[in-house]
Image (tube, rainbow, N blue to C red; front, top):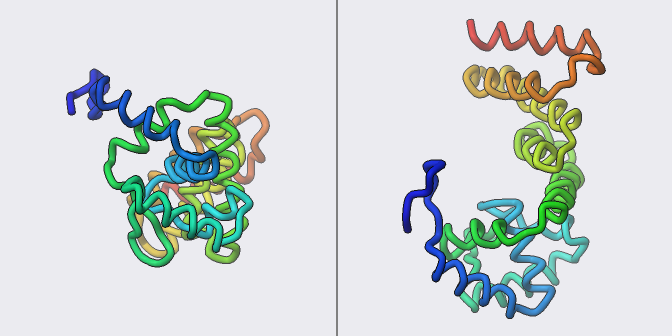
Length: 193
């Protein structure tokens, strides 16, 4: 690997070409699952992946098993997947059309919200990240605030402050409810004391 100008590791061109070729030769369903997994990022929750692709858990498991045999995915545990190499999601995401990437992030956010139900606040930052990547700033801000309140109540103050800042950064101050903004700012003040 080599260092890119933005400070992250980038995949050398010949290796990138090999990975792209290998992914393009996958059957459509396997490729779709691999792309969705790359959008979700490791660890990939199998139920969220199923919700995102509108497939049964059994079908997702079969496709994941096929990709595991091809040494593209790994089973982290019975309910989550990982990647055989950290380069794989980077290459897969790098090949995505920007519009497709937006749609997939929106699908990921909605799948998380649907699958998690009552546990949504624990993973609200992940949902917020996907809404932000999908360009849905207002929804992302709301989920970052939910995450911040969750962390504030658990006394994880640094994380709460970080998420309140993200919520405020993503908010459109002209249209956001002023009482909500005031609450976020006051709560940010509590987190940074």
